Amino acid sequence: MVSKVVIAGAGIGGLALAVALQRRGVRVTVFERASQLTTAGAGIALPANGVKALQQLGLGEAVMRAGMVVERAVILNSRGRQLGPEVDLTEVYRAMGASLVALHRGRLHAALLDGVGADAVMTAAQVASFEQDGRSVHVALANGERVNAELLVGADGLHSSVRAQLVGTGAPVYSGYTSWRGVTPSNSVALPSRTSESWGRGERFGIVPIGFGEIYWFAVANAPPDGQDVDVRRDLMARFGSWHEPVAAIIEATPPDRILRTDIYDRDPIERWHAGRVALLGDAAHPMTPNLGQGAGQAIEDAVVLDECLAASSSIEEALTRYEQRRVARANGIVRASRRFGAIAQWSNPMAAWVRDWAMSLTPASVAINQAKRLMDGT
Image 1 (cartoon, rainbow, N blue to C red):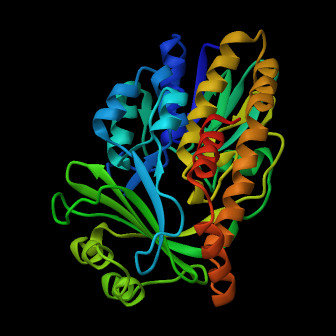
Image 2 (cartoon, rainbow, N blue to C red):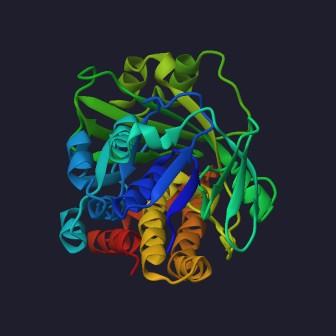
């Protein structure tokens, strides 16, 4: 039904879609605005639903080899006291048929690129605009080049140029907090036996072993947007250096040039992700805060479902309508839930934070497991 597709953006969602389409013999070109495809970045905890979707693309084993399974997770306070139950996720994994895998983002990206093939990805090539008619979509690149295809998919992230023309929904929404992310050098810090997230007042710190002797960590703090660090390690130690071990050791072990600062944004959900022969996917369609760890998982789910709809439909319009019917409610629900979760986790009022922590301490493990299962399998 469709034989030539252009994808804007060589991120996780765009590359997953390219792999899916190529497996059915569809010609795919991915245009990426960056001048080169690097393995830079920090870590990622890819949820079981994302891993299961990658299994459908034949990439499950490659991703499992690139990281490690998260078996246990817990929420602590800044002193290291357990706030909620330590959750054994193996029950969720048995139900899902896949596991949550923590890995370096660069290794995940490399596995996807291997699945696509370098020839299908054009760097320093940003999709600037498009025009369409009943038979094709005419894509204009920022360098003046023009390309014709039967379908354009905007997978070009939070600041998607495809979305801007398609739905024009204005600026992203700042969450009120910023983040720092890093990966410790191999074997520089003793590996913890579980994944943890620690909550303070308006601040959080997450610790995630990702295999190869490395630890992915993230720090979150309430702050105005566009902040700058004079000395990032010193600034982080001032905020988190007195927290429980191994927080200070992790910060001290991470070279400053491997620490990324990112303000956290999302967008208000929209109900329509396509018009004619143009569709949105991943952060271009439903950017979400990272609080529930579902950004990459939802983008990969988008890719698999869009490919299935294209394969099973008799027209582009039918396929894209089915895609929206299957994906909009789930993805938008997670956008809203992640926003709510982040707002609560970032409470800075002492009384509010005490009530939050007290409520967490009363949560049974069974409730936490059921919540994780619903998040990952959509039921």
